[in-house]
Image (tube, rainbow, N blue to C red):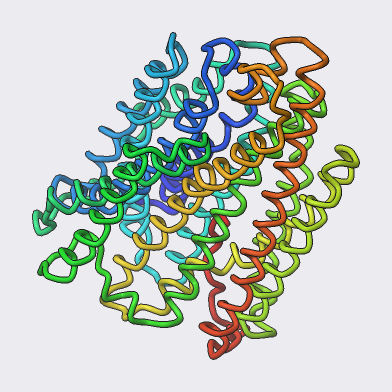
Length: 494
């Protein structure tokens, strides 16, 4: 394959990477409008936003193993066709339940794309340095997709209905299906990977009931079904861990977590994703439902933060050539914590101060985001680099999904707690329901309550990031600065 053809193949492989992240964030600005059109309450809104991310994370390792068996290019193209079809189904869903089902299908399809993409990248480039640059390109596409999602969603909503935010998925997948068979290497299956259906089932059973239980608690439902869901999820998680330790070919190789530096880098990526996923959710809703911006203006308001994060991603690896990566990462998460503390203080004061503080936070999160994957993979033995890469992808996607569910549920719980007792049932279902009533006596206290929810959520997120900073120094402080001549660690979305 010629150099030009190889570069073109890499460009094609960045498309699914960009889209998987884009689909996680593009929905955020559409949420108020689709909630109104589909009459989706707060609980259904959270399922619509986060079921995608949880199923992407839950199936990533499974699909990586499946690609080893049937061939990476074949799995990528199957996943692309499924993703395109599910995007059409989501765009035309007439009820919240059908939209949740379509988002679930998108999550499973999305999980086929990333492992296949990275495996094919390693087939394109055999030189270690060029391979590292190519992987960095793919992970930068993930970051760009996640950060640009709100702005693209706002642009589409300015001219079309809420379902239009899913149509880029159709266009990109049609392009991938058209050129992929001609440009991409075969990546033939080895047949050596083994799927363990019980591990797949236990991993999902550990995630989804816990998410359901957390959301129910946020609604004030602490009944027997909620407690049972939490117990089932925790029990499944324990069973999953025990099974992975016994299997010769585990779905998730937990032995990698024996390396302290890997644990520290992975925890930073996971908790960073939790914080930023949750904050993007509450801030995009605040911009539309409290500040009254239309979807396009709300999306554009996040663009300074997008640029700041990208600058941080680029700067992180270069700073790590002069000082230890731990200090770069801890400095970034501390700066992000200060930015989120600024969001908490600025939220009652208006949009501009809040966005400025959030931009500072995003720049801070870009610094560790530019080092995460390189440290995870570099901390593992060479023979386990592939498993470490899958673990880092899973941690990244799971962090965003947990942020949307967990931090979103925290915001819902605080919002309900701050509402006056006399407000209507529509307001208790969520701020979108309150705004649709058009009653100033309902809208004003609901907006005030949501502003309080943003303040509390940002403050909790800031504390989490300070804990992350201490964790980074404790677990990664021994990692030396990258030599000037060595390839920088690969960027990854925070």
